[in-house]
Length: 246
Image (tube, rainbow, N blue to C red; front, side):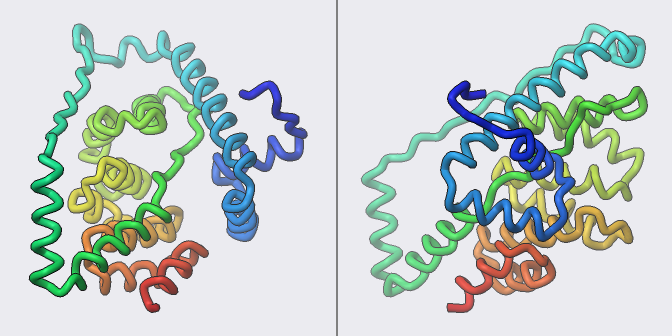
């Protein structure tokens, strides 16, 4: 944490409440409004998020001996190698120009506007606190640490076997969908998030509708984006709908 910050106990508890999702809807909405207008608050939020993640990681490491017998031996986790494709910039400009000319510019600029709207409002779900994990859910929370570190592939690889045993689990469906969305795999994310909206459990439904709406927004399915955003009570959902209806 930045030593120059002078954070009161009340503010620390407020930020922790936002990260851990223990705020009421009204409190969270007010906090998000503050975030938009206070860059220092954003910095403090990220510093405290990193601090809590370090605490959670250490807590899991200390419990590792308890679970050693349950973990497979002689196996190593391998990160999926990232494959970056480089495009010829002049070719991209030429293709874009052809699209603008052939379609009168409408499709091109609409797509860019929606892409900007997605970028403005999308941020990955921050995840769940993991300091209170037990032997029964170690694998889930171990994957949650990976998720918070943005190692989405590893998190998914740990969650999917758990989901195979409990396909109706709303938490697993929600976070696997969230991980795929954070990876930019909207087509894979949507079915998991839709499953959450069809279950009786209400815990993640509001979030699921919001992220489904964003996923459809990014893929240019504006009508389905609107339908799902209308089912979410988040202030951001209303703001996006206002932009789309202009």
